[in-house]
Amino acid sequence: MNRINAAEREKIAAEYEGEAERIRIVAKAKAEAESKRLQGQGIADQRREIARGLEESVEVLNQVGINSQEASALIVITQHYDTMQAMGESTNSNLILLPNAPTVASDMLSSLITSFAASEQLGEAMKAKTKEKERLRELK
Image 1 (tube, rainbow, N blue to C red):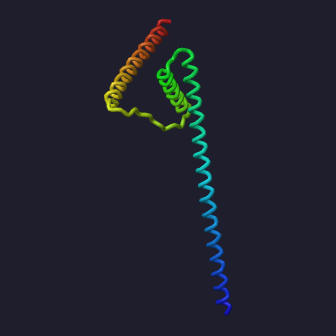
Image 2: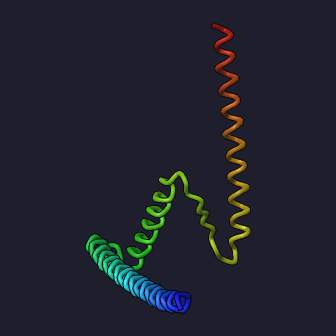
Image 3: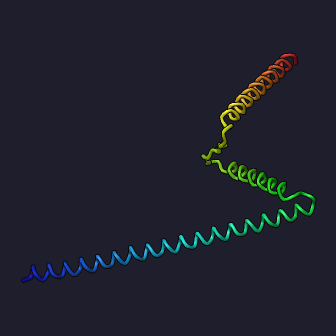
């Protein structure tokens, strides 16, 4: 009889534990849903404010004689450089931005060749300068 009573109590305890787990899962899901809703609202508010700021910037630039198209291009370039600067400030950044267009491969190759050539010229100039300094030290 004791085993029957113990089994019955274990069964009731398991039911309560299952119900408690279900309540925890539902509460967690509700919290996640609310979090995502608030994140979405925050993103929407952020985009709205960005749009207002861009509109104000275009108006200011129009007042000094820059048309809307030129103003938009200027704003895009400014945002690009702001983004590059922000990425450069982080020493742990592992982000690489690559252009994406049909002519990218040849443009990138051309840029790499130009960079390597400039790097080689800079290296040669530094070597020559170092040799000149060493020669001047020897003369003294």
